[in-house]
Image (cartoon, rainbow, N blue to C red; front, side):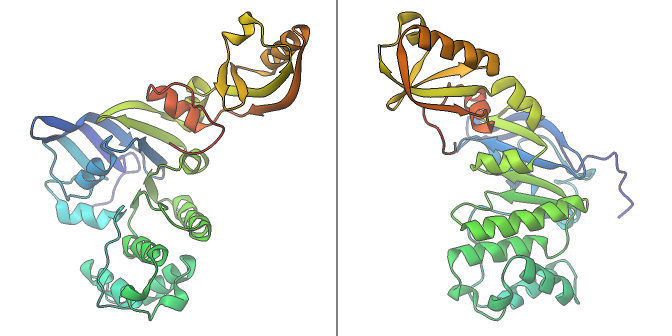
Amino acid sequence: MSPISRDTPAVRLRGVVKRYGDRNVVDGVSLDIEQGEFFALLGANGAGKTTLISMLAGLTRPSAGSVQVLGHEVTREPYLTRRLLGVVPQELVFDPFFTVREALRLQSGYFGLRRNDDWIDELLHHLGLTRQAQQNMRALSGGMKRRVMVAQALVHKPPVIVLDEPTAGVDVELRQSLWHFITELNRQGHTVLLTTHYLEEAESLCSRIGMLKLGHLVALDSTHALLSRFASTQLLLRCTGQPLPPQLAQRARAVGARVAWTVRDASEVEALLGELRAAGCDLDELEVRRADLEDAFLQIMGAGPRDDAGGSA
């Protein structure tokens, strides 16, 4: 394989379509993910994220368009592009006849790596699997099996790492250790493509975000820019005494026993509190909630402002 220019995108999608019958599950998606990026691909269930990853991994052929990994066309050079990728799928897939170490050695063999035990030991250490190295895969818990899947995806040190819901249903310890390890690999130059429903993960880890809706790419920008353009700070409070005057009530919405307003900055918070005091409303509870990626996600997806103070989409 010839040297890859730093200007070559790690992933390039051009007009990608995947059609099942008369329905386009992915519909004309085009984007570039640069080398060394930590990129999030977000969307509701059925948006087309996993289908797009399957085409990237060569498991599904696109109906139209071009899918490239580091300048190589997936449909024309599938063996080469698979060496460049490490994919952690959503589903738990494991061979019940091998120990953890044997499974990783076998995975290494698929890529022609005969003496890979030093790296396997490092993977076992960073993913908290050292004590389970000689255990049969059948004996592992679901969270431990997912750790092994991450190790299998990384066993050949791929330059592009694809994580499809890697922390779904796993414990906090695994999340922390996984993100610490993946972040370090990203610092070393590995490109990371993440899909997740835990939007706080995407907000804290990823420098750029794309959002899919019904197979269409509906947003693509830096995390900071998306938060600045779409997210809004929420002022939530509980009032006693006088009811809200009409001019304030029409700008508010109910959030359980509290009411909420969308505000842009501190001066607007101060003005709103002044209006409430002037109307004789006593404040029993007050919270100013910082804008986050979930606010932006719901606005972009057309669901309107969220009606609670937490959770994930």
